[in-house]
Length: 214
Image (tube, rainbow, N blue to C red; front, side, top):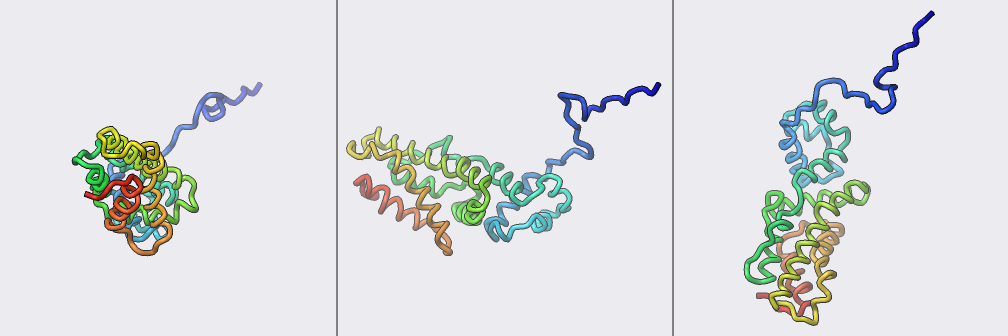
């Protein structure tokens, strides 16, 4: 009488198939993800390719494709790799609301203000077509920035810098700089520079609070 075939680990309930092949080598991840952000800033999402990242980093294309099967996955990993704006954990405290707001604008996060803006500009078209990218930009970048500005405004209110009549508007005003930045990146073909943010701070945010620039 023929014995029944043994049940494999794949078929056995409650088991998972083990990955075969060599384990991933993560030693080059930092270089690859940083290079992805560089190319994103230089070329934009639409023109970025995994082949180009492989060429820039000197890695085999197969290495990248084993780690990140698509360009979307690679860019998602690159954005997540840099974390959230550092000001979310360490608010600037330079003596005035305007100085603190400008310190956030001038933050060295992602290398420099210009590189950071170039990366965000390179992501703009992608966030319209990829819900996953739009979600990660919102949760890792936009919402943390809104929180930073909200905390700076609340601190200024507690110090008496903001007139009491305008304190109730802080939750809305905290969105002004991120919203204006997103709109400008989405609608303008020209680079966004520091003077744009200075104008938003002085002529919109502080003006709405009836505060004068230092």
